Amino acid sequence: MAERIKHLVEIAKEARIPKKRAGYIEIAEFQKSDLTKGYFCKACVYFLDVQGGKCAIVKSQGEDCNGRFSKVIAPFGYCSLWAPNKSMLKK
Image (cartoon, rainbow, N blue to C red):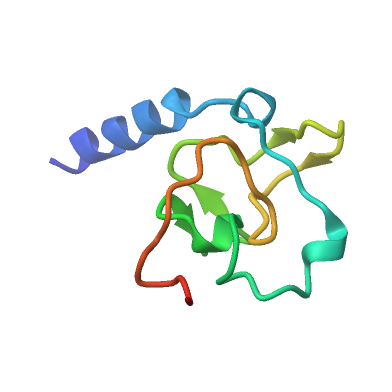
């Protein structure tokens, strides 16, 4: 059973798409913004707040649309695949 789970995790890792293809971008000026308002990764249903930031559908490591390389999905980043985490958003 544990081997099956490990196998499924590996498949999921490979199925994620690169940052550039997702339209992912990080703008440092947004680091101190209220990340519960707007289209930030922090407020996305796919965002996982672990190990600096992960996404269920976008690869963590890679180059963004600005040509910047990083190993995490930043909470202040955003991409074209964003979907609201309704429990997180403020009105």
